[in-house]
Image (tube, rainbow, N blue to C red):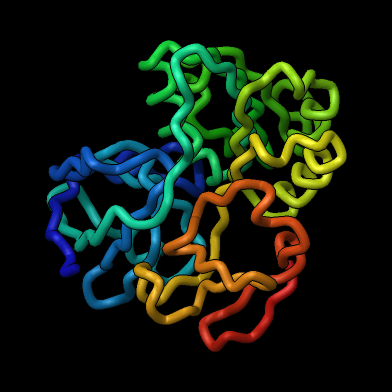
Length: 259
């Protein structure tokens, strides 16, 4: 699939390190949790989660995202996708728990907005390093019950999303969804595995992508060899039992990198 050229129509500074880029093409076929390959002209093509059907929300972490942050309204990007498996959409009468950390809030807010539009009962646990880095607080508040934690205690509860999770009646939820730093998700995985509820949990993973369509194998995860770009990025918790989750990932050359 060739990239579609899109024009940036609006840039929103969400946090000191994160911006939302709205463009003039809506990917209405996208399911919350899917991703697109974003071509920053002359630099690189990188995977990005959709925060809405016509926007990506990006944290500046490398050369490509630094170049992206230098673009202005009216500039263009190349977009391929959407790709991958998104979240299983909840039914109208279901009760769901969302757990998000940092820039992992991007696919979670997309799911929250969809679920809220269907009348789903939503509880969200949102974490960030500090108050300034909290993402989409207003949107998540409008979608349902919201619990906030910050590592340094600069907003709401001092601590981690897992501190709230262990105090939550997990059995009362029909589905649980999470995305965020992998060590956060590893801790969540351990709690949910102990509670024997992995079958109703979905994890959105991040790995290094080259093609985005399952051909190159760069994003395969041990031990099952599942491809994050094609079989994921959203996985049922049972698929991640005895996997590399929270242990290591691979860089561009295929070398293992510890978290």
